[in-house]
Length: 349
Image (cartoon, rainbow, N blue to C red; front, side, top):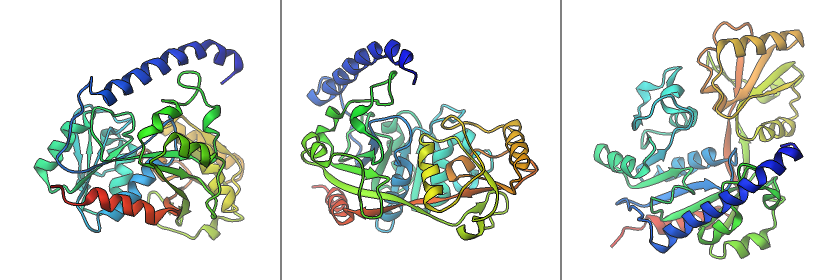
């Protein structure tokens, strides 16, 4: 944000900070009621807008938990064109499914086994009750739930970007933070994402422990899978892209993460086009991308798995479109995480 814009918006950030702190204090003190679902609720959220790895973390947790329990994911479905509460079924995953459910729920549905049900709606409490009335549920995963204070959670996980300075950011609208770091005092798990292979990152862990004294810290990074043609579902090795000319594009919360992944893989696109998070790609967007790529001598377009959920108009645009799937890989703290999860999942008296 330009400095002049920051000066204009910063006073509003102070107002926002007071309102957000007052809201959280009202729920902590019991002034505002908190609804309880009859099964354990595991929340995955963050302090900021934009990508910190929440959805890959939800996917990781759901896949692992579903080997032992039936999991219901409760999510808002950001970017969808409908408002009613909906359950995502495999037979609804047509190319336009993201318009009904949002790109992230559709991506989760494609990744996860049938023992995981996915429910989309604004009231996660009502959504959770509906899920329980239609199928077996042993635990709920609350996607992007840290600010959804009206619902009790049994385990609060907060995602942090290990490559960003948490303490240099302003609150909205001057910056990208939804809340300041004092909101972390009751957090159970601090999940630092985008670490290197040794778990190193840019955050001050001593300060994090002071802010969240009861929290364990786990660290993760992305593990890249083979690129996939979004129309034919053909896959090729990452090595097959090296030395070829291609253009990349994405509409995600943290495009730097995508570019960093490409660099780590020794993949060097001719150009990377950025769109707003959850951007719905229209045919003219894709034709313009294809034209630009051809002008640079590119053979293909490469995007993220999340963006691929919004490319229902990608047929016959002149160049093939490939996606680069990633999965969460924990590099430190996995045993501690599962000790916490198992404690949450113990039968209630």
